[in-house]
Image (cartoon, rainbow over all chains, first blue to last red):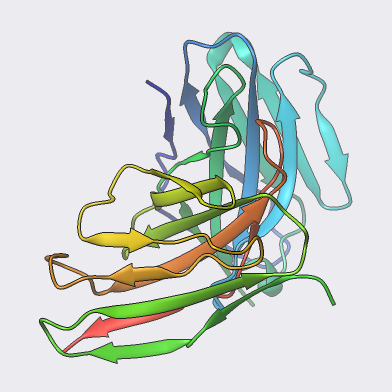
Length: 117
Length: 113
C-alpha cells in the first residue's frame, strides 16, 4: 500500500529565512509520481510541482526548489528567502502508475508553515 | 475562466438531515474526485469518477453517495448515516490517468449542529 509521511506538523520561521519541508513516501511500484500542493488560508489547493520516478533531477523555480532522492524515498521542498505570503499548509502526494485507479492521489498529513514578519 | 466551482462555501445542517454539496467544472476533465479534510489531517478520498455514469468508492465512502450524470457535475450527498460529517470538503478534477495533476475547487465547510 502506498503511504506519504510529512513528519513536520508545524514550522514557524521569520521572513527571509530558508525553510525545508520534508516528505517521505512508500510504494511498491517502480513507476510513480510525486506532487506538492499548497493550501493557503482560503482553502483551495494549488498545484506546485510534479515529478515522475524516473526523473531524479532536482528542480528550481524561483524561490522554490525540490530535492527528489529515490534512495531515501524522499521528495523535499525548500523555500528560499521565505515571505509572509508563503504561509500555508503544504501537502506532498503520491500517485502510482500501476494502480487501476488512474490518477488517484494519496496525500500526506500536511505541514503548516507560518512565516512571521 | 476555466475552473472548478463548489457551492455553498459554508453549509449548516441539523443532525439527521441529508445534504448535497455541489461541484461543477468547465475544464473538460473526465475524472472528478471528492475529498474530506479534518483539522490537522491530510485529504482523504471519498469517491471518484473516471467517466460519466461511473464512480468508485474511495477510502471513506461510508455515509456518502454521489452521482455523475453529466461530465461537468459531480454532486456529493452527505447522508444521515455519516456519523461525523462536520469537515471541509474539497472537489477536484483531472485528466484521467496517473501522473496528471488534480485541480481543486474552493471547498465547502459543512457544520452539523
